[in-house]
Image (cartoon, rainbow, N blue to C red; front, side):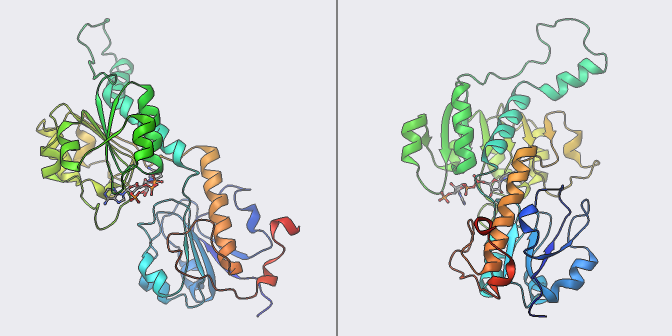
Amino acid sequence: MTDALPLVLVSRALPPGWLDRLEGRCEMLVGDADVAGFDSPLLEALPRAEGILCLLTERVDAALLDRAPRLRVVSNMAVGVDNIDVAACTARGIPVGHTPGVLTEATADLAMALLLSAARRLPEAARDAREGRWSTWSPTGWLGTDLHGARLGIVGLGKIGAAVARRARGFGLELVYASRSARPELEAELGLRRLLLPELLATSDMVSLHVPLDEHTHHLIDAAALRSMKPSALLVNTARGPIVDPDALEHAVRNGEIAGAALDVTDPEPLPPEHPLFARPEVLVLPHIGSATRGTRRRMAELAADNLLAGLRGRPLPHTVNPEVEPRARAPHRLGPSRGER
Ligand code: NAP
């Protein structure tokens, strides 16, 4: 029994090759590729599991941890860890890994795509062209908003917020931000100006959200926040769905309190097709594809695997959200040779 490789629960099947570096270093029990959550065989194996590699669709809470007394590492294949009860992991001495950095550029690209799509009404225009409503070049058809000269308010100037700022600068937008910490180096580099959130919301032509979801940012954009925005304003959310109150958003666009929204993330996910937000032509909804490029997703999987292996070896994780937890080794020599030793 002690000679056995550590058991790792991989919540969802990933494409061949993405987790190659785990081969021979642990025993993997892999869940269904297309079903969110831990399926029954994985739940039954929790008492033996020493590692979990999961996606943002899996909830890792205290009840689940209580069923996994041998667990020594949780590795999330996402940068956000709102699906994980980090405090419960910390209390049990379990390090939690995540995948910052590798998805920054892809997510910033998508935020710009949403900004451009909403400003220039691409979904409506494309639908009208396809469905026969393009009768002539129209001087007043599908009029949108200029990006050049507009003010973009970035909420949360971390890695992705900064990458959006770099892109937006190239489009001639005026840049302001509201964030927990000041970023003077970025202010100097990109001409950003820091504002308090109420002023940012009241004065921006476009607002892009890049804060993590936690108890401080849940419904950060609520009815009052939306009412305070310009009637011409556009809201872009590539962060997490519950940062925006969806009922308040639907009310705000229906009543012209803001001009439109473009959402990569929603609450709930998936957003049911009958949800009133889908009925609003001013709202564009994507199925949470911020990091969805082949290269980025593969790099996320590899980083998640590196975090997992470090935890199993009792070594510091390359990227963890609870660095105060000291990883616990079981039998490092039984995890197979490290990459350099092969
Ligand atoms: P990050 O580098 O940690 O940046 C987050 C920024 O938000 C930091 O500057 C942080 O301030 C700031 N912040 C945190 N709490 C705040 C608050 N209450 N009020 C104001 N600012 C606050 O993270 P990131 O890599 O840019 O990712 C941001 C989020 O994007 C992730 O948490 C994830 O949920 C989401 N995301 C979504 C997708 C997608 O597929 N759509 C892909 C990747 C990431 P400090 O500097 O003081 O910490």
